[in-house]
Length: 160
Image 1 (cartoon, rainbow, N blue to C red):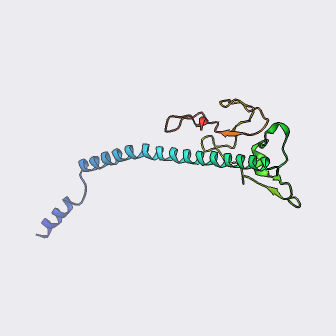
Image 2 (cartoon, rainbow, N blue to C red):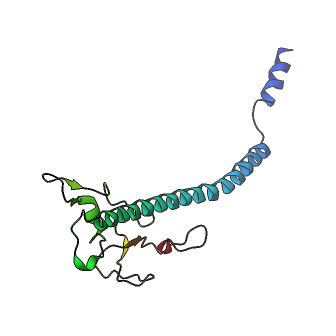
Image 3 (cartoon, rainbow, N blue to C red):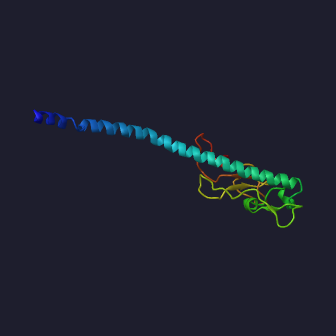
């Protein structure tokens, strides 16, 4: 009688080949659905980071322009009060009336473009055409991504 019990337990202890194939098919199906969703989420996060970086740099440019309009920053005649380059926003400028070598900085660092992976941003000066992709070099009026990619909403990253 004991041998009969042993045989009954042993036959039900493992999975059948059919059960293993069904399990693998379900796992494959779930993975094939989850992978595109994870890829889309990663792209969405990069797009959010790009929007925030552009917002921060444009706010710094605007703040520089505000201080120059108030006469607190010495400006070049053809610059219209905009910074000469992005590096100036990081290194800072001497504010009129400040004692010593106090420099007002607008950015901690030039952010890395999440789409290209470097700090080489497209620049536009006040003298450039609004849709120009070549920087005249006179000042920095606007920044944009040099990425040739397309966003999830169908727009080009360089048009943001």
